[in-house]
Image (tube, rainbow, N blue to C red):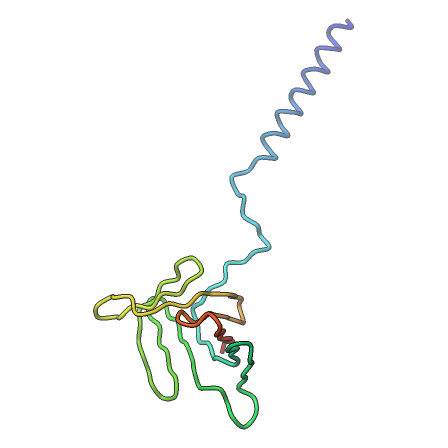
Length: 136
């Protein structure tokens, strides 16, 4: 009788242990609090920091009319009336710009921050220049 009770307790403990192992391990290791943010959309450069000096587009002298428009497979960059078209790829922390006709890499910017409302990039030629964009 004692042996049967002991056997049942051991069996229940093994069952609970096996059940906890199968329910605690999951193939979905994704953090639900992190949302994948997309770069697709229109962005306006509202602030630049160059060599520690901050320039904003407020006041009488705006910094520029620099705008990025990222589409599914194309990027349009407009600044001071000049429009340039690129193919772009987000590669890790970098946005890489390619000539749409030759597909040759023409430039890149490092993404410092990308949220649903703000994009901050570092200039490829001058790591002392940060460009801040807000989503339009």
